Image 1: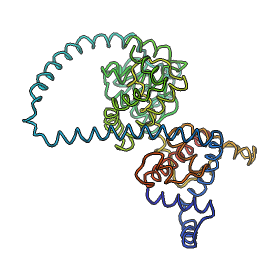
Image 2: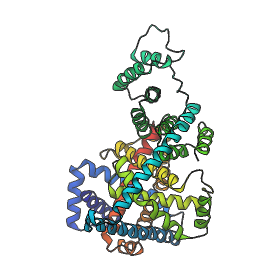
Image 3: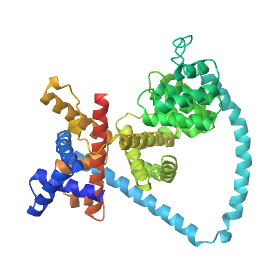
Image 4: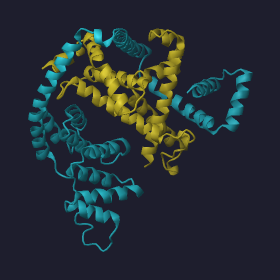
Length: 263
Length: 186
């Protein structure tokens, strides 16, 4: 980062024509020998032109107003960080056994555990019910396309097992498929098979990976990720993920409906 | 509903409401981002600030008039998107390939069109980058505002903090533009 900051400063001076002889020497040396520096120089030239063009759309006063607002956010941060630090400090200096609220807290925790276990027992069947009414396995492209084909590739075997409800077998095949091709449809089918097989942690991992690494079928992945959270009783995450797709043309209606039922 | 009151209050300029929200979810967000997405503490804090700014902007611009869920759910969803955006950028960015080497336009379309498209992509990325980065970069490079002055406006103790922020912003912009150019090609 430090090296990068120095390079940026050097390039800024070069672009402004404000270099000393010493800096000019360093600049030329870097330009001749360092590929990363050369690309940074090319990028900076273009980026700064773009920044300037964007900046011309608003006045300096408007920008200063925005900066002032950010300054207020920084003040909020400073305040919150200070309180956080003071909280940690208190925890460090008062020995645990001398804290008067320890017993009260322990009693509260026990009480909360009883209450929440009762709540969870009631909540779980309700979530299961919602999950069952919203979950429909992703329709694999294998249906009708590969069945009966003489070409017994790994993918066709995976789709065949998936389409015929042999989910554990499908999971094994999809893992094999994904070793050689990072294919979003296979990821989506794998996650669905894991959901059907009750492997919730694995399904969560598969869909999260898709959302983070793919640009195709992301809405579908988010929908199934939300259902995975719902089944796993992770309600805040389920709601957050549903909210993300609530404007989507394909899943928006379903997501909004489910959100309302969860509220 | 409490959420609609919050939105109304913020829209009417009640910054105390925003400060209360900032404080209410800040620690939980930072813990969540560092535990679930292996963000550093600083990264998580920066993302939380950006999420708060987006939340505020959406209310002011009437993009957010009511919430289906809670403010917390909304903030965490924005934050999650920002984290994933950053992770994608980390993954796809290659420091030895210049933006200009990425052919965003077929050669027959010619050089001026190519440059125009590149500049358009940069402007879109600045929008995506959001504040404080966008404003900071524009004030520094276009209005030629010095780092000491920027530091003063942000109540920083010295201009080194402003310099760090400016470098981080430029780096993020560069990463975003590279990804957008690559997406444009594919």
